[in-house]
Structure formats: C-alpha cells, structure tokens
Figure: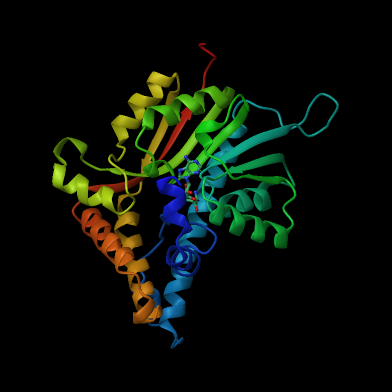
Length: 300
Ligand SMILES: C[S@@+](CC[C@H](N)C(=O)[O-])C[C@H]1O[C@@H](n2cnc3c(N)ncnc32)[C@H](O)[C@@H]1O
C-alpha cells in the first residue's frame, strides 16, 4: 500500500478529517477573520462555533478556487458553439479527497456552463466518502477515479486543479510533466499547496520535522514549483501567498479536536503532527499558496 493510501486508510485519521477538518474538504482554509471576533456571540456553544468557523474558511477556499477556475476557463474560450450549444469543458481535480471543491464548482457554474468534472484520488476511503456525498446531492457530472493522477494519460483537460495534494509527493517534476501532458493547449493548471516559505534558509532539522507529519522527504517552494513548471513547458500566470491562513488553520483545527474528541480516542500522532506544523507556520517556515500556470502551446 502506498504511503498516501495508508495515511488516509486509518480510522482515526478519517474521523479526524471528516469531523474536525473542513467537512467536505481536507485543505487549508482561507480565513476572513480571527475566531475570537465571533466567540463572544449569544451562543454558549463555542465548540460548535469554532467548527462552523473552520468549515466556512474551507468553503471559502473552495469558492476562491471555483472563481479562479471559471475566470481562467473563460479567458480564451467560447461558452457556446456556432449552433448555440453549450461547449463541454473538461476539468480535473488531482487529489480530490472528499470532493468539496468539485461540488462547489458544479453548484456554482454548471447551470451557466457545461462542466464535466473528474476527481482523481489514490485513497479508496476518501473516494468512497466523496461518492457518498455526490450520490446524496446527485452530481451526475462528477466522475470519481480511485487512482493516482500520475497515471493519467492523454485526457486533454481544459483545467487541471488541485488543492494541497502535491505536498504528499516527493517527485515534484513528475507532477508538472503529467499536467503538461494532460492539458489542452491554452489549458490552465491551478493549484494550492503547502510550501516552504524560506527554502534557502530552512535547516535540515526543520525540514525533517515538517516532513514527518505526512511521511515525505521534501516540501515544495515557490521558486521550485516555478522551475518545475517551466521545465515541463508551462508558463507562470500568478502566485498568491496565504501566509496568515496557514498560521490560523492548524491552531484552530488542534483546538477544535482537543475540545471535542474524548481524551481516550485522541490520536497522539495527529497532535504531534499538528504541533509541528503550528510551530513551523508561526516561525515562517511553512506557507500556503495558489499557483496558476498555462500551457501556451504543445512543444512535443
Ligand atoms: C490534503 S488532501 C486534500 C484533498 C482535497 N484536494 C481537498 O482540498 O479537500 C490530499 C489528497 O491528495 C490525495 N493524493 C495524494 N497523492 C495522490 C496521487 N498521487 N494521486 C491521487 N491522489 C493523491 C490524497 O489521497 C488526499 O485525498
């Protein structure tokens, strides 16, 4: 079993991600405020409030991604053909997890646009949960593939997007090579990831501590990803850094988990991993960013 499959196969991890993380997503949320601003409302149930606050930040991140995807999709494309029929746009989510953003995209834009969405994920547990929610909400335009996105061949997507999945892979160049191979000309590669903020000054000890939470040997960086993309033949459109959000995110998740999970079922590995990432976000060793690249032409 691969490390990633193994990581998400664990029952305690599934409880943690489904109950305490972002609900339908396992990414770093985008926070519009500090939690304390809302904590002194009339509600006595602060734990519920914190849970909602975290899920709102997670949904907001999905909204940001969905808006970016739609904006870039429509830069050089027509929504209708010469007969007035809607053009079908093909979009892939690499490392879709529970599929929250694919459903957001489907709900937000599928009336106005004809979207065909493909979710790829290596973890069967995550794919099962994604399929369960899709069935309830009846998203017939979302297909789920329980496989590595590195094994996709010649699918020709208009957009490939991903959220916080590439952090699980050591071979970053291969991700960009596969993205290039599977994008249409004028297609965009839009992804968020957790990266090193200052890779040039990051000590070996720091890198080791960051890596052990998810069993990897390397972590990406802004310049590292730009270099990989250029090597693969992709052109940089933009990078947006969300430094304050990563600092908030792991702290809130830890607080919510500790306040609600009974002490006897709290997982010490989960807590150690969160402590490591809280510290390294605070020390500006880690950050989160959204990257946008374009395939201008087919150079092969
Ligand atoms: C941190 S979670 C993020 C999930 C989702 N993108 C979201 O925003 O909620 C990372 C996901 O990437 C998946 N993943 C990691 N490596 C993968 C690979 N090579 N192929 C497919 N899925 C992968 C994991 O199984 C996991 O579901």
